[in-house]
Amino acid sequence: MVKSVEINAHAKINLALDVISRREDGYHELRMIMQQIELHDVLYIEEIEAGNISISCSNPNIPVDASNLVYKSWKLMSNLYKVDNGIRIHIDKHIPVAAGLAGGSADAAAVLKGLNTLWNMGLTNQELMDIAVNIGADVPYCIMGKTALAEGIGEKLTAIQKMKETHILLAKPPIDVSTAQVYKSLDLDNIKRHPDIEGLIKYINSNYQKELASNMVNVLETVTAKKYPIIEKIKLEMMRFGALGSMMSGSGPSVFGIFDDYENMSRCKNDLERWAGKVIMTKTI
Ligand code: ATP
Image (cartoon, protein in one colour):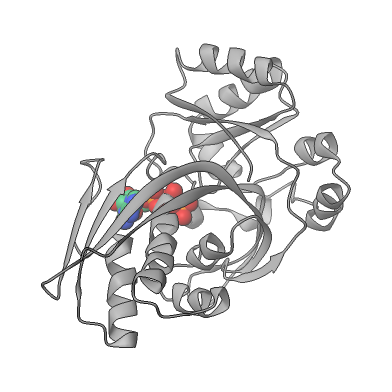
């Protein structure tokens, strides 16, 4: 009998991203508001005879060897729980890669959840999050989902009231951005505007969509948007088409816009598709 599970791995955007300090170990102390969106990869996980793993992905540019984060998830779970069945994983990729949308982390989280089900391990979400931190700083959030405050290097999580469902337009310009390089280039002493995280959380709690959207700040824009003018151009275009607010997600280069009107979003998509790279209409979940 074939045992298999199918699981969705959702992308995230940052409604705020602040860098507090650089730590001795080279990592940065962060404060971020994370929001999960409908856009997702689909993972098919199937048990096979041999005690090994085989990975495939619909996007040929993604490595399918031990450097894929889903491999790390499998390795950790099988070592921790001494399961020696083999696994086949197929990733149907929809989340733009290296885009600031945590695509790899979402897949890793989905595999932890999937194996928990497939192997009847009965782990709680908290237990899965404790395992997830060994894979990457964003992976525990990808297990938790919804709306959350992330601190530390992103692994200290506090749930916030779930944001009201909102239209999101995403644009991923055709630029490759290295997250490590962005943090390296960040000049902490010259950041002029930091997000008011507490204020933004109040807006989320009160459903003040417009105030939230117009006060979002991502300090990493001082590096990525400065280097690539197309990011500011996309933000301005989203505002021109009626977005309540627009900002870069993570270390970029993806830009998102919050829209309260579907028609405006749709018109903006048609416009951006001509010059801004990959454009996707989605929503918060
Ligand atoms: P973050 O927002 O967490 O910084 P990101 O969205 O910028 O992440 P990813 O899409 O996770 O970036 O990809 C970063 C790199 O990780 C890719 O260049 C890819 O080679 C590698 N990678 C490993 N596993 C995966 C995976 N399952 N999906 C996508 N990329 C993966």
